[in-house]
Each structure stands twice: as C-alpha cells, then as structure tokens.
Image 1 (cartoon, helix red, strand yellow):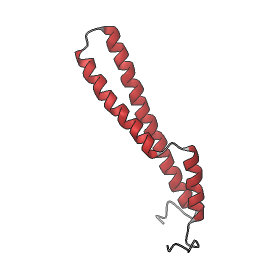
Image 2 (spheres, rainbow, N blue to C red):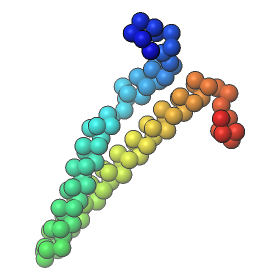
Image 3 (tube, helix red, strand yellow):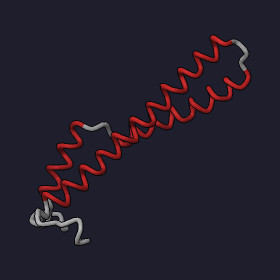
Image 4 (tube, rainbow, N blue to C red):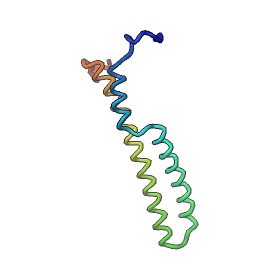
Length: 103
C-alpha cells in the first residue's frame, strides 16, 4: 500500500482488532508475566526439594500452584484472543465462509 491509498485497507479487520485490543491484555505484558511465573515455579520447586519443614513445603506448593494457574490463565486468554481475531477475520470479512469446504 502506498502512503496515500487507503482504499485497500481492510477496515473491518482494523476495527475488529481495535475492539479486541482495547479490552485484552497485551501479548507482550502477558508473555512477561507468564515467563516470570515459569521462572518462579522452577525456583520454588528447587526450594521444595531442599526444605524440611512441612509448613514451608505447604507454602511453597501454594506458590507453585498460583504461578501455574497464572500461566494457564494467560494461555487461555491469549488463545481466545487469537481465535477471536481469526473468527472476525473469516466471518466478518467473508460471511459466506464455510469451514468444512476448506476455503
């Protein structure tokens, strides 16, 4: 697209992505948070191997569980956003799309 030709812009796609982008967490921030949780899980699991106190083990297991839930939540959210963007692109831009035909 040249700098002055806006006729080839897919405005439905632009508007759809704008709507999703206003309510969705950014992929960069979600990725940072998930990566932090993955690193924390590794650290807590190492600590679990060496600790002897039962109360400390319970506390560490709770932290591992919370971080694992955080990672799962981010995967669900980002996966849902990806599917939402795909559906907007396919069904709004091409209402006659038939997923069974392989079009």
